[in-house]
Amino acid sequence: MSFAFLPGLLAAVASPEDPAAKFIRLLTVFLLAMWVGFEVITKVPQRLHTPLTSGSNAISGITAVGALVAAGGVTAAGFGFGNLLGLVAVVFAMINVAGGFIVTYRMLQMFNPKKK
Amino acid sequence: MNDGGALMSSQAWINLAYLASSMLFIVAFKLLSSPRTAVRGNFLGAAGMALAIGAALFEPPVREAVALRGAWPVVLLFLCGGAGAAVGAAMAVRYPMTGMPQMVALLNGFGGAASAFVAAAELWNKPVSARLVEASGDATPAAALALRDLVPWTQFGIATALAGLIGAVTFWGSLVAFGKLEELPRFKKPWTAPARHWINLGLAAATLLLVAGVCTYPGSFLLFILLIISGSCLGITLTLPIGGADMPVVICLLNSYSGLAAAAAGFVIDNSVLVIAGSLVGASGLILTAIMCKAMNRSLVGVLFGGLGTTAAVSGDDIYAGKIKSAGAEEIAMVLEGADRVVIVPGYGLAVAQAQHAVRELADVLQARGTTVEYAIHPVAGRMPGHMNVLLAEADIPYDKLREMDDINPTFPETDVAIVIGANDVVNPAARTDPTSPIAGMPILDVDKARTVVVVKRSLSPGFAGIPNPLFAADNTLMYFADGKKAILDLTAAMQKR
Picture 1: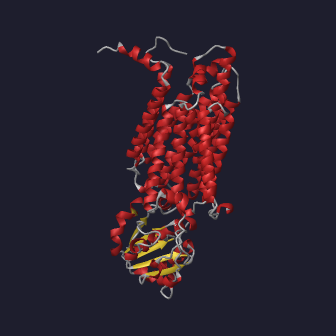
Picture 2 (picture 1 turned 180 degrees about the vertical axis):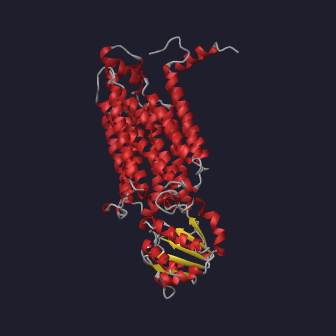
Picture 3 (picture 1 turned 180 degrees about the horizontal axis):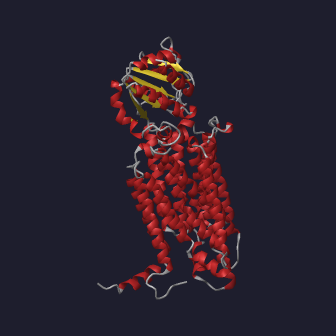
């Protein structure tokens, strides 16, 4: 089994993509992830709906990744208003992330009989 | 930039890290489906988040910035990220457990706002890069991409408009939800002015036009700001009319929105982990919304725009006249004394009265006498999905005693006493018997089939649906008029004297 095809494949992946093709690729990811989400989450029992709500709320803080990219990029123009907007996004997203996971942890401790 | 001969470019490693964190999120959701593994699920979710955030620090824009300016852009990112995390952690640690619904609403709002700010930052940066290309004439790949994105109706423009709109609606909607749940005086009464439908319609039309505007002119920051303003107004005016009992639906829906906003931000910056995590959250919120609506036998449109008060309100006087039997702590203690099986039905009122610890003490006294005590949990009881479960778990009530509606309904005929605390519409037999009732067909807890029903309630005032409850006038019902917490404490004291 030879991996000689790999560099060519990677080059093809790295080459600039047609915008419509890129959109459809992301749309595919979006729809498949929605599907996985529906399948996994319908199995969560009612008694765990509160931790599920707050845990998924914490995961929606993933937008922190976008915030870091938007805030961190300093163009040749220097630090601009766009970076400032990005930094605000970083602060807000990190409030969501840290708060969300800790609240979920505290809720789940309520279900733990040995909590006190 | 490009690692040339290396088998995998650094971008490939970053994408691999994103893939791993996406997988961790899916496994985290999977583990959240059992009380035994839920804590581990939460940890895996946090690990996935840490991995994705770590990988983001190696994205090309950040590395370019480091190459140009040295370490300070990263220091700035760490300072801001650390400050946000510290604020979030302080809020999460300090807030009392009983205020969890409003805490989740608030955190959710920040997530939505963050997505809107990401879209705003990208929208500001793109034209800047594009202008630089035009001025200098040298087209770096990033700048060329910027130029390509600024034509009408590209993925960039559409996604930016959606991320900004959904993010703004989420933020302001969540703030209003927080105000309602925190019972700030200003938000006590739902906004029911008849003109609200016209205001919402006008705002929705303006918002749609502005979405189209941003999609057509993605370079215009002004249009984007106008879209954010109109989305913010819409978030407020859509949430204000919603009553307290419908809060679980609103929380789920806003949760779903914050996920969809993150997914839209993923489309803005072409990032699959944002799209995956965002759509998982979006799906989770939509499922919970559907479950909540089904449990109230109402359509989502009905919850958002209807309000139940539109049907001719039936006066409770004919139904209640002369049939209400009121009882005090002593009398009810006597009934409980002979009971083998007691089912406690907690509702919204129990959360308001903070009576969960008192309920547990009563259950302890009953169990010490050999009585079986169980809890019947209606899916929409409380202020957020599964709220009663967390509230009762906080009072150390073991979760195997908490029974779901379909599970416990067949056992009511063998129940000696059902104690309803602060619940009304979810135990109203009219939903089963009266096809003309506004709540006809809503699944309810069949407490009326128990031998004796004790209803702890401040007065005969109707529940959220605004309709009288024939249960209160039933032959086997005793009304115990008092504040939930005090009533249970008095009852416990009366039981202990026996």
